[in-house]
Figure 1 (tube, protein in one colour):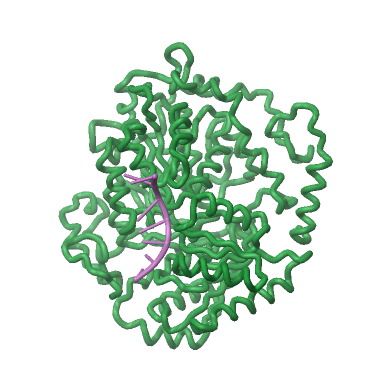
Figure 2: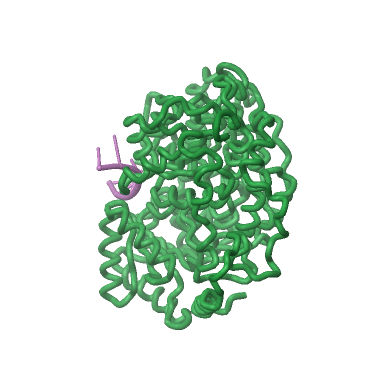
Amino acid sequence: MPTSWADSVSAAENLAAARPRSSYVPPHLRNRPPSTDPPAHASYAGPAASVQDQSGYGGPNVGGSRWTGPRNDFRSGYGGGGGRGSGGGWNNRTGGWDRGRDREANPFADDDAEPFVEPENSGINFDAYEDIPVETSGDNVPPPVNTFVEIDLGEAVNLNIRRCKYVKPTPVQKHAIPIALAGRDLMACAQTGSGKTAAFCFPIISGIMRGQFPRPPRPRVAFPLALILSPTRELSCQIHDEAKKFAYQTGVRVVVAYGGAPINQQLRELERGVHILVATPGRLVDLLERARVSLQMIRYLALDEADRMLDMGFEPQIRKIVQQMDMPPPGVRQTMLFSATFPKEIQRLALDFLSSYIFLAVGRVGSSTDLIVQRVEYVQETDKRSHLMDLLHAQRANGSHGKQALTLVFVETKKGADSLEHWLCMNGFPATAIHGDRTQQEREYALKSFKTGNTPILVATDVAARGLDIPHVAHVVNFDIPNDIDDYVHRIGRTGRAGKSGLATAFFNENNSSVARSLADLMQEANQEVPAWLSRYAARSSHGGSKNRRGGNRFGGRDFRKDSSFNRGGVTDYYGGANMSSGYGAPGGYAAPYGGAGVTSAWD
DNA sequence: AAAAAAT
């Protein structure tokens, strides 16, 4: 148990200062006490060898295709194996499997320099994940695994798993990885912070290493084999950083592309060859229109925060990328959708992108357990600032060595973020802010300054609501409560990560009456204390189907194919499409903001 | 109604 941040910081600093840097230490042995070293890796023959050795493996994809044939044929059409030609590599011209690996930066180098280092550094409290409820549905669901050893991800990836200090898979990984390795499409609903990124990255990396792929047909155009899309630039960066760790010295190249940053550097990276492209939609569309990226060789598509990616703001861009460019259709590529929340109407939309998929729901680790203590306080608009100050004062008293616990304050608008940041600073609270009107440089600086504890208060819009893994956030304050309860779920999920505890406080007033019911339900479901006044609000505003009514089970979501309003005697009906619109009456309290002729707001 | 996402 770490004593305090400041102690951890100084301990880490001492450690770093004491370490001699004179002789070469292999990356995986750096910064580690001898007792925790992984076993010697004399047998580690290098990634290129692994790739060659396994080149006969047919790839992970099984199952039929509704297109031109089995997925594997897609590969053999070009007849170009990874080992052919002069250099042996998928992207021979620009580096391939072998060249450039010496230059590959060690993505683990900074890990132990992190100020908040902890003794047993798997980082994840697995006890919090025991006996977590899991629901799967779909045809022939591959059985889960209990250890990484059971999954043959290959020697190089196994090594990276050890470097990441992953001891055993999280529940979502136990289920999702076998499904993905079996080549199945997947819709996975699991709390962020429970290891989703690794759950889709490991199978993709493994599949790319084992598969044989045609040579890129044109120079100066990037032909990624896998595409990972996310809704914010910072999240794409985070996924990229993670994926680089998982792919370290495997020869699999991961490149990130997002807006707000100079495109030329991204273009250069792409030209060096890319197997896995992590991107935000806007920049990717730009690259596609410039014909600098082609999706024709995509074999794996992953949407992180998939419900957000398919909501009204993003859907057109996603459809353009996935359906209107040159990406292979469902059944040819493998598609994986991940999110902590999956509203039914979004699940329905997602059918367009999936083929005979498996639905997986892992009980929420954070938001519906006591790991996050949720409080709701009645605060008038005009009292919010002074109320926040009271909270921060109380926290400052609890902090150690004058350092405050990290507090993430969510507001509704960019303007509101600016003005609250300014006000906090004026009142002696070290705050910074992040929102979409700031430059990318400012955004990244704010995030970094917050993460390091330099500025322990971060005021944020929903740009920071999803996916961002910021360790040691002790407190999430919903200064403004979001209108969509799913956003609330994602926001409070910034604390209580990796099985750790956290606190979430929301400032409720009349303006939030539309979410009173769903908020009360959610809190009750999570065994939180629901104030009597909130229950009264909930009862008052609950009649009439609200968009915010959720399934009412203990899962983060439920396979909508099981919903009677969508079901016509078998899940296969949904792939016919004929009864889709007629079956879309949403009697379960979900109005229909999407699709169909009458696109009406469900909450006007 | 707001936020995000290309220049």
